[in-house]
Image: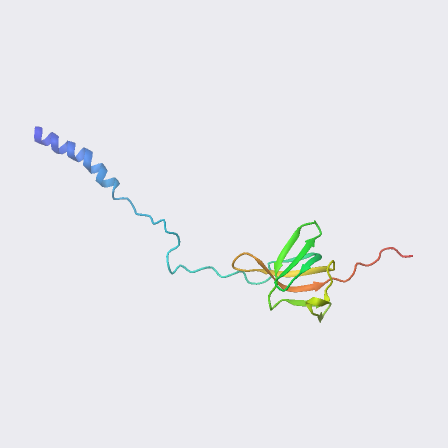
Length: 127
């Protein structure tokens, strides 16, 4: 009888401990090797309209209509247009009204596709 009690006590203590140790192992190392990376967003991410504040070989900075400054990368593929005519970046003066079509890259930064010089606003005063 005492032997049965010892066996039951052993199973009562060790069996739950053994069962809990059988849990699923979860890795905390992040993404497994070979996991495919989603492709970068293809196409236009947005158009930004505002006043040109800075134009360098690497960056276009505009101030939008709601007074926010937007910095957009410039690449060798960035096109500069006035109407339907292609122009040089140096032909655009600072403080010119422009629209920039941009795409979002894999690093979530914007890159300019087209920089379009907007026509001057029409004068509504007829004098």
